Length: 301
Image (cartoon, helix red, strand yellow):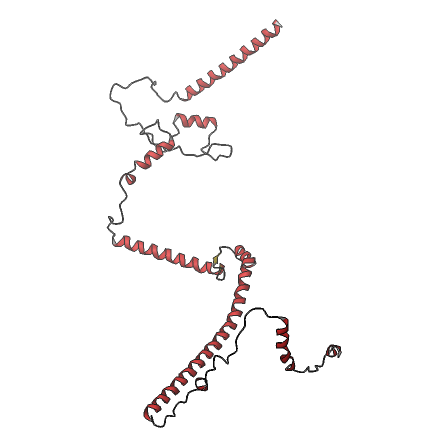
């Protein structure tokens, strides 16, 4: 067991040595590649005037030169100027962000830039405050005409898919065909046809009633004219007017109260009813023989 542990320790130490040697070799090769450029340490502070004639200012608008350390490192790692990712779908340009405050995130920085822009700082002017020029008026008229033309074209196209019976608008052919084959549309169609049929008959009846009413009015007007003519003739020739004799109903003498028949109310005996009913039996009409389809049995009875 001790031998195995010693062997494993020696193998691990040998691996670490190999890795360390490889790192050193890579660092040396990288330093040799950068030996041509002179660079100051990070902790160095400039105390005298610096000559900036041959120095280039880094910006997002200019491409990175081939002498850049990061660019050379990417080339060594296998970057070929394409987007990162398995399918090379990443962005090729760096993310643009302001240098005003590096502590903000990308989303917050973009929001601050939008609200602090010169276009959004000032309040939007009202329509009453804006003085419309000729160019703005022409542009507005052109836009209005274009919108009106588009709306009219859309209406003409949609007229094909409009059901006047149901007052419904559809957009596609499938929807319109489904509506035409629906129960609601066919029910309204049948109801309209039935209403038109009844409307024609009711129209004829109405015409007949109007004709009858006109005839009655004409007869009334003719009677009124005749009466007026009679009155005028009576006023012109009062001598020839016949004297109106009283009616028979007025001349007939009134019956004496004693001779009037008295009406009796209440119950009476059977004898009284029989005596009263005897004279009526004599006045009965004789039976008349009526031919029957079923025979003469009913007549004989």
